[in-house]
Length: 231
Length: 137
Length: 191
Image 1: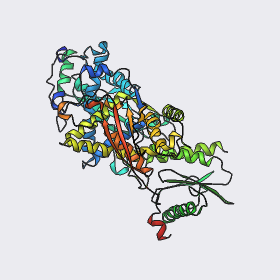
Image 2: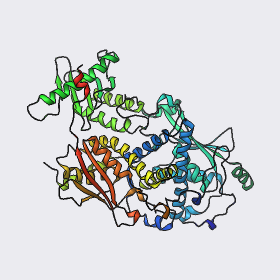
Image 3: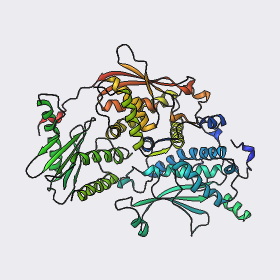
């Protein structure tokens, strides 16, 4: 388990992510510490079941969404709560990977390294595949997009028309945000539903999904400033 | 060639109705609702009047169509009609039941026992039916 | 005729092999995130435990149909068959682990499901302020909800819990009532 001292703390970890209406809880101490980060827990985990059914995950997520839906009054609020849930997971996933793979543990200093770790290594660890694509926004230097045709959260979900653009992959957006923040690249991450057009629509089998998910990653000013200095 | 699919919940209400080919008879939504509850009642009566333990109507054969019903242990009924000599009705119904357990029951926006309006379910249902129609030609 | 023990195991393996899989750690972390949200939403541990049971129930009433559709299990012959089916087929199919049935009472109306391997508790340690938390209580709700949909009313609770210091996880299942199928009002009202 990479001890806090091994990382250069350029940024204060307890920051409010610019553009969001609330501060992500950042350190383990400020949150209820049930899911332990102790190295004992991580070390002991090896050798047990490595897989569960997709159904178990889908039912769990479905119940989480229903639970949240009963307590919020807007689509945005629902997505924010899913993001919050994912954030803690993102932090943990980063810690896990660093604990396990000492070479990966070497701190990512550049933005693109961190993003590539997320869209390839982290994606593979969680979802068994790399993200469909990673691209940089042509309009904004601080924005990147991770494309995923069918996020694991959406496999069985049909969003009714009255819920418009709601995307349950907001949970995954939270995971990305948590992992990036843990790696000292804080960003606002949101999940967007994009209709497939042109070539992509032809490639998916007839009757396949008509939409895909794009995770919009908007890095904080500190990160962009640091990147500029390192360049 | 399949004609129509009806799904009836355990209280006897029709929660899904889909024409599976252009040859399907035209039914108003009231007709199909009535049909659903009538079938539910007949199904129950059939089980009751049987001299031995019975699980109700499974098959119905007529000169112009055949009907197959799958009643789940949870009380839902999947009813499919098809032209005579359409094979594998049970297999298709089983496949539809599985689609229901995936694309309806795992949808957080679907409320149990309510009418089914899940786009993915309909999409996969159409694909399934088309696959079987193509295979039997 | 009741299915034999070997058949339950085989059914469980077959069903598990057909299921799409996800990473177990990702699943455990997701469950952990959900429990943390509940702990933040509800001040009181008893309320969290109850909510976990309710959420499990909501999952169970939906999960049962997938189990029936995909496991190849028909109606169970008796409660012993039901118990073995839950432990060897259902737990295997959905969680990839095999549980055991133990501790039948004299009447044959109550049994325990013993879990040596619980995918929900990967990485979890209960801090002292949450020592009363029944972390995996969702499992009790799932069993309760699933069985209710096939006309069995049961009570389920954790008798032993690894996170609270016991050496294994034991879920106690007690049959309260077998619900008779009833003609509903629609039939009596005519068409």
